Image (cartoon, rainbow, N blue to C red; front, side, top):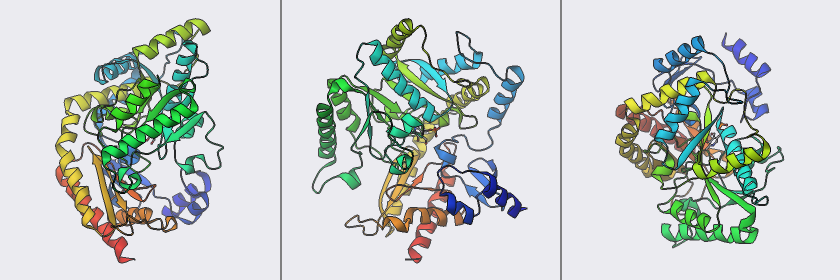
Length: 452
Ligand SMILES: Cc1ncc(COP(=O)(O)O)c(C=O)c1O
């Protein structure tokens, strides 16, 4: 049975983010069911889903209320859309709830189906905004090296990871990438964190001056950079960046696709890190990933310009067939209800010290150079030499090997660029389950070390 299904996978499925020829040699890791923070594979192994899937299944893998919300909406109205003044109750309720929990300046919500679509839509909005304001040249977007914003033509262009560009002719929109706020690796000898963030802000300003602020529309940033290695910005980073952007009339887009909905210990990462965005993108934990849905939230200032533009062009000419799908929206509404009833922000806050200490405790291991954490997202960075911070050769894929060892100990982790191993468990996790994760992480590190 196993062989048949594994063979069919190899024969028919084209896998994303996968080495396609290696996939012919490796048995697929087939997940069959889940419960709480656990998933089972088709070999009967019960694993802790230490990555919440792709940083998204916040409520774990058997939340009956979400299944019920989907079923009720399926039975009532399985499909309708939001084009041309049409609407649905779940889309209205969801938009209202999002504005209620968002930072004060957020005024409207545009619903889409994924994080990449949300980022693309935010970029289209800032272009439309500048066109409406009569600034047709103010279009370039500043992103950061190691950023992850998705895979579509625009969001993939903004992503600052080579493997997302290679072979796809990206970047394909006007974009420039600035420095990464990763003090451990990018800080210079003798430089304090404060001096480091000053330098990053100065570099940004220099890039803006060279390019001309009249040509730059927006700066996009994840509050914590997720797929690039869980890079937590130093204190004061966003305040300094924001001051530069304000001086040059450049909008801030915060990509909350991973950080949104309590992941960093506040409802949004912008609140944890004191950023004041004009637009925010959300997805993933918006529905606990039970159905695909995302959105862009925007301020009144942006909204007003979109209204001006739509008068000029006859309509705001953008929308997706499934954007704001009523079943996905109903599941998202129920997800937000659960977050509120269970006080998910306080739950994350209560576990955050244990989470940070658990990762920090691993830094006594010879392979671990640094631990990083914010709320319930974190990573350890693997080094060959702790005193020099020298890394292993890229070809040794040490972070991927550690993730493989972790899987042998029934724990799913994720290797990320820069030899970091990421951890992002479902938000419903409890204290004893967290302890179990750190025990298993240590076993995986020991296994790795034993092979060296
Ligand atoms: C910060 C961020 N933005 C955007 C995306 C893209 O989202 P999606 O995979 O739903 O298109 C991701 C996905 O991981 C992400 O981490």
